[in-house]
Image (cartoon, rainbow, N blue to C red; front, side, top):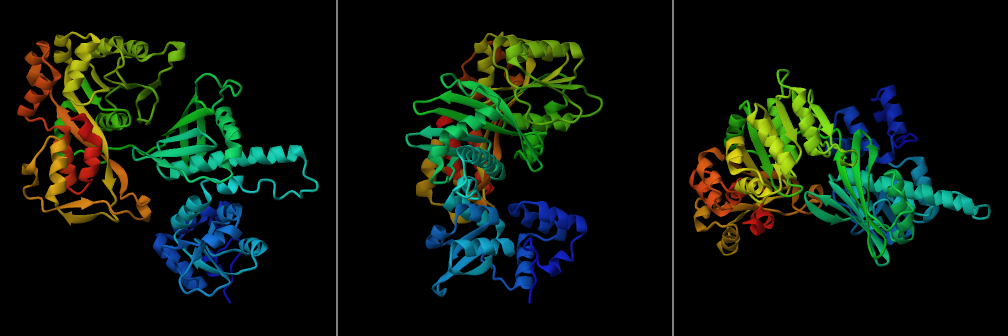
Length: 561
């Protein structure tokens, strides 16, 4: 007979682990144990499931379906803590409760199940991500935290104070669960939005907002959740009439997040938006941000210049800071003194001196930049040029022997030139200082596990190309295009991650036109004549390379052309 230890680990498997690993396994929350065990045994997900199946005799279900009747008898708290979910099986005998979990059930889990249902359980194994997904989709994210708070206290002796303490603890756990799940899914923002009669929570993943499935009883915790977030951000919880800004230092396993918090009063209650900034986020190089070899060659040529300005433009969330960080890492060396001025600091650059602006005490971009010039820098990175003062100091710094990196909010690369002139910078200074402008967008990357190639449907593709300013000529030699399908790994969206699309503009050959204050349209046309590849055409190359879809490109660019 197979022996399972108190933590759900087969004895034969436990004997292959060191004492330290077994202790770490025992102390880890159940949802983290599968990954820890896989790493300890040097097995991938499929390999560990196969090994557990061999040792326990439990069948593996790759895509288990939810049992709606089983949901009624298995409480959310048990499902979340034990990482178990009821599944439905065709042809299964009546009266059995089919349950899936990533690890074999331990004695405590089986006792819990027996407490809530007389139905005889039959156990199966399934991928941990799928189990978590089913729990979140059917019970709601954080459901285990808010389910039956205080159930461990006998009702006869439970006091009002006890109930309040339980609710407070439940809310703390819920907020932590929502943030942790956001980190796990790669969210950049989390929005808590009070609506009439309920609280809506949404993640921004790969640039799009995704509704978070939530527990049915969430509405009565709404005020407590908002207050908890304000307490974490050290905001005034009694002030509900005015917007407030704060920050939270949040640790989720190895992830350390600097969370920027913004509240604003709405007609129902305060809406809270969180920007998640991972302080240990893996830095990107030019390959990872999606630059082709040709584009990298163009950029590297300018990165070798001893002075000048390099600008990256695009809307909020287009990856400008990530690109600048990649450029800094490309040139970083002990021979260069690099100073960055940012708000916020999104990446740590080894060896660089990084300054966080604080407008409330007068440390603005302009003031910080002015002081930085007295620090003998070789390279300066200014997070954003927002006003004439910052623009003028940046340009004069570039003209006095410094290489300056910065960002602007413009739709295309030539637009950065006209934007600086509109700010009040003299055109001859702009023409002399700016060496390179890169406009960029982030498009969702097709999921490599489910995307498929389909024959080109000209009736559908041609209107999309026309919306991007291109035509039938682009389809020559393109028999198929990859399309999104959807699978478990991409949350059935068909996309996973994002890739950059770049428009690279060299202003120097157009010096006279810039000094002559020509329109942005004329400047763009001339740049294209001289070899600049516009955003739409650069994006089309990503489509034909199978990295993204035409629909995704149109969604990002058609309104900007």
